[in-house]
Length: 148
Image 1 (cartoon, rainbow, N blue to C red):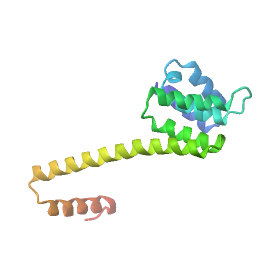
Image 2 (cartoon, one colour):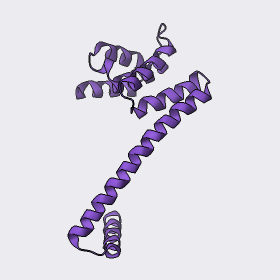
Image 3 (cartoon, rainbow, N blue to C red):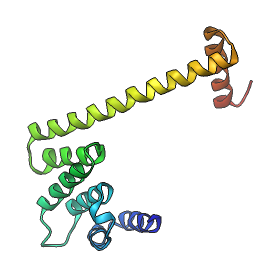
């Protein structure tokens, strides 16, 4: 699978969007997974080949979201599609907000995890929190500046 992703990335850098659509269509896995559908939708918008409709990009993004209701990348692409291609800011706003809500939820989970990890670290080291924060700050400054 990694070989295919590398191949797609090389084609993307070369601007071969038509070929990327063909490669994804030919692959049993990527033609039916949220990641592949999102990439395909992006590439359809950039294709130079006639016969590919922009509505196919919209279908790809919607199918990706159906397969994975938390696929933020597909939501963002669909929002941009509605904004730039369909000139429908109301629909774009809906999808940008949906993506934002998911990312906000993920950020809250990250914050909770970091708080718990830091509290566990402080408790294991038996350091007072104030001393722990100063020590962590000093370590961060040293690692960034390279000097003590």
